[in-house]
Amino acid sequence: MRFCWRRCPSRPGELVRIYQQEPENPATRGGVSAPHFGTLRDQAASFVDVAARYSREDLGLDISHGGTPQRLRVLLVTSDYFRTLRAEPFRGPGLQIEDEAGEPGDDRIGARRVVLSDAVWRARFNGDPSIIGKTIRLSAEPYEVAGIAPAGFEDPTVGAVDAWLPYNLTRDTLTENYSLTVVGRLRTGVSVKQALAELAVLSESMKQRWPEVSASSVVALPLQEDVVAPSRNLLQLLLIAVGLVLLVVCVKRRQPGPRPRDGSLPGVRGPCGARLRPRTTCAAADRRNAGPGGAWRCRWAGAGFARRKCTPKDRS
Image (cartoon, rainbow, N blue to C red; front, side):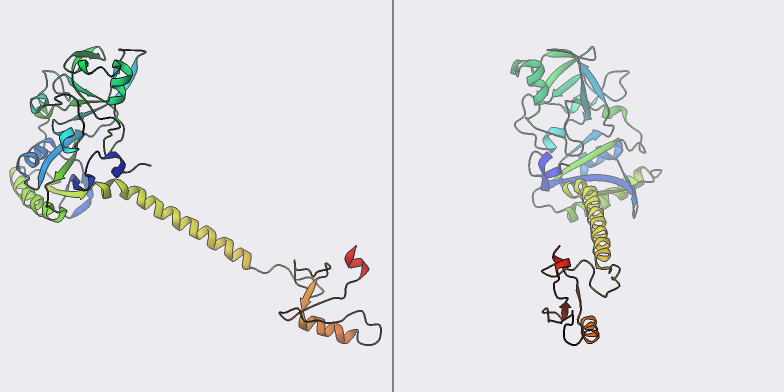
């Protein structure tokens, strides 16, 4: 799994993800509505830039130029998306704020303009820079190429994308339609704690403006922490599981096996293959076989063990 610090184009430590939630209830944390996003973008002084994308990730358009038809993965974003993520170097003028107003009948897509990924630009248009400003067709509809994203650029929350279209923000007016994933870039010298304090004040003003909204509290989390946290929790669970397995294995290995009837230690052999037995057993056998010609004799083995005298049967 790849994490935010490999996806974010520039200075990821300045990025935070912004959520709406019910007051004092992080379990209800979710997306941001378009009216709340507009207020944050216009009034939140803690952020130098704030951008949003439409939260659905399964949108796509077809392209047939320059080869066989291909389904492109598409994100709908606000005009400040690439600036907020510091996508550099960027070719072309990019999306403009007026692109957030769509044509009649378009529910989500704003102006018919598109930013292509570097990979699509090279594969479909041979890396021709003159394509910027020209019109191409996606799913049989005309789109003006507004720019080319930097090579290797990925969205910090969803990964690789083929094309970006402007989101129709002007038509999304529902205050409880939490349809946007919002990312902000902190101003130089502003901490997350300071940003949270300002967001708390803005939350109160927006609550007065839209009293019907249940998720009236706006909060922010460092983007790196927000992206990595689910993977970190999974890793902790895996480590706990591995530890339990090792504990079970160690316990089973320490359990003694069945003791042979002659008192010798199971699985332990002497140099000639004779079974090693505890000293007390050897001493008893020595007493039983004392006298001339006795078949047993004891010898210390460094840890209180004794062994039988080697016989031809042992060596066979």
